[in-house]
Length: 192
Image 1 (cartoon, one colour):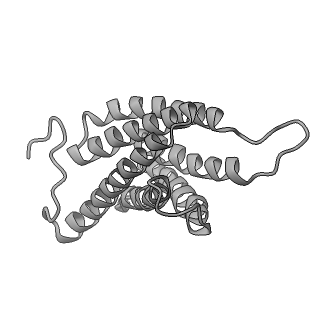
Image 2: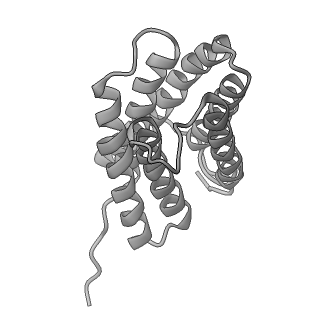
């Protein structure tokens, strides 16, 4: 029986993450208010596209990719839900302190995922290291009410999102051309 080669869903997930992260962090850096563009990206590209990429990673047998993309896809959907779901008589809006706790939990998750990247390429390590720092800054900024920290996080988040876009495009172009067009750094234990 002939085996069909499956496409790499990683670039789709990385682009959904990267572009949405940049848009939200342009807001966090203080350049724009939250706009419908950020919300729509959070639901559809940061959210649904990453979940789809995670499901496709499952098909490929990639536990790390499945966990990362489905988790962060649902993170974006949950974040939009926190902002815009109506409250009932049993719930209240999420205040900045509790949002900080939400972000801190995601930072802990991301720190563990970063450990998983230590056997991967350097570009993926940078994405997860910078995302861990981003979640830490956002958690501290929200819990403390310090908007300067949130503005700093915004600039750091733009770098984080940009690194994900770089890795996505490196994976696409390197595969398309069959050689290294954009370097990503060798994975630990790789022979090349």
